[in-house]
Image (tube, rainbow, N blue to C red; front, side, top):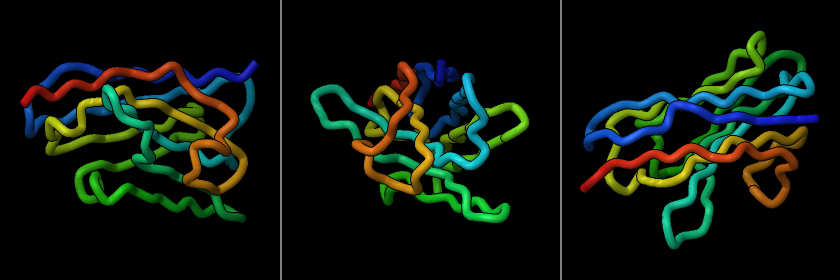
Length: 125
């Protein structure tokens, strides 16, 4: 059974930093696209960042414009874990952050087969 478990969310002041983690189990995800999405209260879930694999051994990273330059996605295949380093946090970054995985290279959340339960990040204004 595939599981994605996020951790690292919390409450912090604007301008602060936080690192989210997502650990996968149930299969090997080294060739999967791993991504972060977020959903603010009353809003639709949106793409944040993705890291995907291109044969034979290259990973590409992608970011939403709203987080580019502030967030960094990385992965540790040995640990089946991805990370989202979030710097210079803003109140508009407040949301539930979800980890997702899929064998296809896609930004489209509708195509992701596997999802975590989410972790809350709150940056008060």
